[in-house]
Image 1 (cartoon, rainbow, N blue to C red):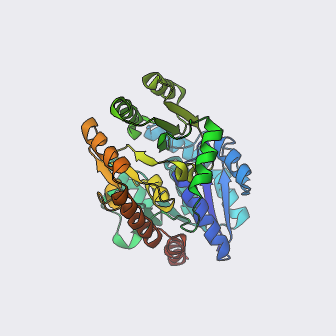
Image 2 (image 1 turned 90 degrees about the vertical axis):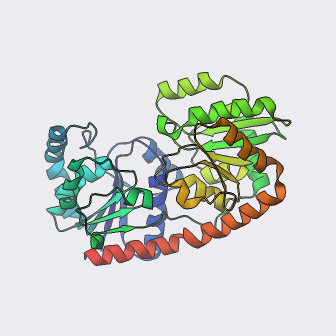
Image 3 (image 1 turned 120 degrees about the horizontal axis):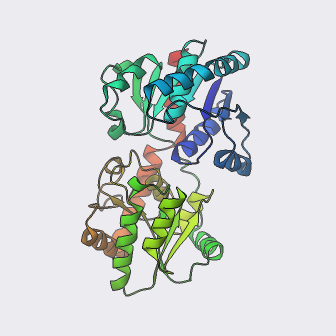
Length: 368
């Protein structure tokens, strides 16, 4: 069995980190696997930096880049031969797709080859009847949360789909003192401030604009010095709008960082402001790094956070509720200590890479 993980290559996010964790575990289990990218850019630079090899198959026009059915079909057809021949030459057994553009581009040629196709759905699907066609494109469907799983088309049978929680290296935790020094020296953050952090993509549905508004309001009334570090990238126009909204020395935009867990370890509190998050990878990463979490109530967050037990939840759009939750995190040290301990145990029990790879290998074996 040989497994292929194709990626577009124009971004680095939670899905990439999840697959890299799976890739490492597959290597430990002596299962040949390969990462492939279509475009040189953020992902290739990231992989080069962390020393993971990959193959390059240049494709410029991928299916699904625009929501046009005829254009999707056209891009599938013009790339068919290149993908089909790659699969044949490299004797690929399973193609594991993790992005809509990849799923639409690779699934059809894979189905017509000797390989099986695994469609990993990491976002919520719309209710459009057009999604029913994906039943014919893949051999198996994996989802990352109940929130996502429940949106799969009804024509996909239970035997062909499974909810598999994302994998995490629960053994790797950073020294908080060293992490904080790293943050302060890297981003010129003042010492002895309360450091609130966000880490993730800068896109509209992540609600980073609301987080900034809440932080600005909170900082007006907080008795201590506070600072917020925003780690991530996005469209230039949106990032510029966020910086204009912030307009204060107390908020630092850090851009991309390839050591997110070390950054999270140095936060006093991490905030996850999206109320429609399909899963919420940074929540689990924070649990492993023993950093308290405040998350918007909704989406996949509700499957990870139990209020005041493994973290804190607030209602999106309610600034007063946000301030009430962050006040408790800052002022109630004993409560926070207990919550952080419970969250760490929960993450180690539920999201280990070992359990994840067992589930995935069972799926691969089912398709052989």
